[in-house]
Length: 331
Image (cartoon, rainbow, N blue to C red):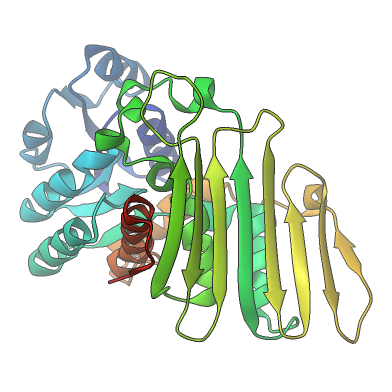
């Protein structure tokens, strides 16, 4: 892989993970941009030869930056991606791609017009146990998938909302954008693009944020498939389970236990220990490598803009449904 000069927009924890992976893969870290003095100082401590900027505009004016990782707060993803595209920089945008489908369209159009790559970070699909389960479903061994149910619940008020911008829905978008965008992307990888959703949300735990504590959404797909997402920070016990129902069998993955179980109509129950599934490459490194290879080898990215948009359109419609109490078409 030929060397690529990369810059980081948003030097927080997510951005640090992305830029560290890029550096480990041979990319040259040119610069980082962040309005917070503390974040810039932390970035400079790790990359002493790199430049630091207060603004995105300053970073994009640096001719040594050929590609950027956008890891700013969620509500800024569109603005920063469009600016990078207009500056002819390739873009890796952290999830969620944006907070509206219209903003996703702006990002896609800007990158297409500039002739630059746009990849969206949806790392969950690369986590070993989830990747293993996805490959099993795709193999056809269980037949055609018809339904997916995913529950991801934890009492994470302290963990999730320590970062200030996350405590306001206007910045983070809410639980479905900030967290369950991962599970919705995973569900769509199995069932396709949803066309209709009915959702409800609840806020019943006293806290310093205005994000819902519980979100439930049922998605309907053109081929008759159904998906259920349940997420939130209302569970002290915690629960993270994935179930996939297929025409010839089903699969259960309990991420709080050490087993994936699946059964086919003409077979026996099979158990696969999660701990025995090898991690040949860290999920973050894999998504970053795929982006760098797409840029340096001029090939398509593995998670393009229209795939990132798919989950955002579903989430936007889900929140509209929760607000109106009615099913909403996904556009």
